[in-house]
Image (cartoon, rainbow, N blue to C red):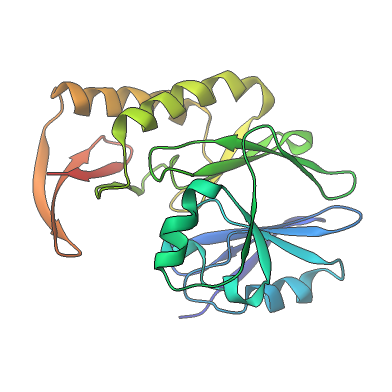
Length: 230
């Protein structure tokens, strides 16, 4: 399956990789890949064709569709709560831990880390405040599917993360998710929060389905699907 590179502006690109996307952000001194793809295993080479700057890697979380090219890097940024899942994938490399409040300065382009646990324990978003964009990973989507089934997903944490993210809304105008529509509006945060609350309250009807050998419940929230434990 091929990939497509889309130039967003002079120092920002997104790579569409068959149902998932990753991003390349450049400053004046270095560049940062946000995630490393699913089908591609040469994200570093793709980045080198776009910028002459040294390229570093940050993973929003350790799900397999976000770490496809990680072994091209000796080290990478990741929340430490993702390490167990990452090691189970069989991937190698040194994790440089990042947590909320940390800032990665690319040179004239400061990127802040926002913690969004729930989809996974160490899911993070990247706030590019100068460009007023939040790169959200998987927890925020529109017309996509948010995976919330499995032992490492937690709906209560997810709701708290959405409530927490709401406090950052004055700092960005749009959201760039890893899946489905892009860009999406900040209103999606509130819609997802209300949908997740309704699921926990039992006021939205779900349908049983099977995925990856798991019996799950699929909730259609109208603007996205949420796949939850049975």
